[in-house]
Structure formats: structure tokens, C-alpha cells
Image (cartoon, rainbow, N blue to C red):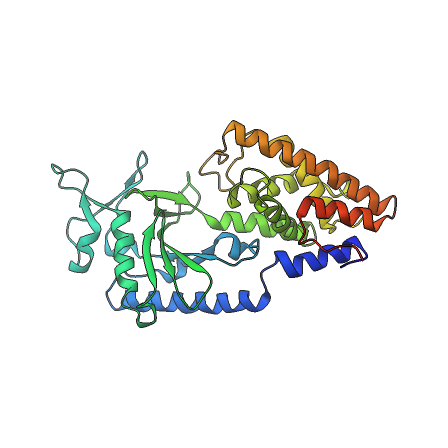
Length: 346
């Protein structure tokens, strides 16, 4: 129950949207312990030597844009390429060429590019499988579910609600033509470029510029997206769209003369931005993948219609609150948009 719109949103975030601080803190401690265990299995020869200075966390939990439930945590494990003498890769398929001989415990990671070639290439799927096997040597993970999937090795512990997606990677410092980046598995035995640091920097910079409201807006839009009233927009694409909105926004044209940290006003405008832009391309923040909007035209049109319909309701909710001072009407409109978990008036 709430008698003001601000109070209703505060309660909604605390009870329904935000990951609880205690759970987040527990997840961080568990994640740090996992980093330490992976270093141990590497040092003991079960896996490639680590380059721990390149270990990073990424994904929505790291960016603080995760909403309930906390179901996955993403980490990158930096690997030492010196052991393999990685001496180049081809741009067309991102193959990593390595020396023909290496330590016995690394041989399984090597595969011929073809049966007639003496050149050796590092197979990213075999690297992941090697990590799966190595994690089995951690006593605490003996009963865990561990398997390779896509770019990551997935670790599911019975003692936690969340899953770890562990991505082995080589850090490349770049040169005069390329910014620094990571090479991670592409799910098909080869490698692909990424740089999660660019995503984090963009989120942090905009959140600071807009007095902390960007993270709250992203979480709110994610909740709206998850309600099942339309085709789902993937988390990364949705975050990128919201950041695109804030990039083209100035304080003067979105706040109706009010403080810039009012999440309901930004949410209203993001709905309009989604309606106007979901039918077009969405460019990857990292400038590596290009267009990341893989939705079909039918899906885009359905999302556009839903976003526009909810924008009209959000516009009316803001008018009811600010102009008409009718908190009950405003809260009821927000409940219509966000569902019955949004507090009732009273």
C-alpha cells in the first residue's frame, strides 16, 4: 500500500525489483572464492596457467542492473598465452595459432586445422572441456553440475540459487589499429572478440551523469520486459537501448521541470524511445558485434505496439500525479503497466 507515487516506486523496487543486499553480498563473497579456487587448480597443473590481472566480472550482476531473482553471475578468467606461444590469429575465423609442441597437460587443447597441416590451433571448445574437468578437482564442487555451454563453462552449486558462467579468455592489448579486447570461446571451437569493460564504463558514466537514475531505470525496464505481455527483448539488447536513450537525452527535455532522478519520468520516456526505435538496428556498445537486434519484424512490431500503449498510460500517470495531484489514479495506472506487484493505493 502507498499514498504517493514516489512511495509506491520505492516499495516496488525494494520488494519486487532489486536484488536484496544480503544476497548480493553473499554472491560477491562466493564469486571471489571461486576466483581463488580456479587459480589453485591452474597452479596445480589441472588447467592453463592463469593471468589473474585480467580476471574480470561482467554481465548484469557486475553492472548492478540485475533484477530478482539472482540466477546467474558471469566472470572472465584470464589465461596466460605465453605457455602456448600464441603467435597470431586469422581475422576471418578468429583461429589462434599455437606452437606444435607444449606440455603434456595442454596437448588435449590442441587440434589440427586440417589433417594435412602441421600448424596447430587452439580449440576453444577443448579449452572449456579442460576447465570442466579441472573444476571437478575442487572438493567443494564434487557434487556440482558443471558443463560447457556456448562461450562459458556453467557451474551450478546446490548451496546457491545462482549459476556461474565462467568464460576462459586471452587478453589482447591491441595496437594502433585496435583497442584492447578479450578473446573468448565462440561456442564452435574458435574465438570471438569482446570487451565488457566498455559496457561497464558506459553504464557507470551515464549513471553518474544522471544522478544514479540510470541503473534504476534499466532495472524497471527489465521488469516491464519480463512481464510476458510481448516478445522478450534479451537483457543486453534492452540495456543497450536504455543507454542509447540516455545518451541522446538532456536534462532539460525530459524532466518536466522536476529533478532528474525521478525514475518514473525516465521510464515513461524510455517506453516512447523503445516504441520509436525497436524496429531499427541496435548497435553494440563495444562496437564489435554491430547490430545486435535479432528480433523478427513480427516481434519488433508487437513490442512497438506494447511500448506505445504503455507509454500513453505512463504519460497519463505522470499527468495525474504532477498536474492533477491525483495519486490514486496515477498509482492505478502504474499498476496497469507494471502488474499487481506494484503497490496499491491506500
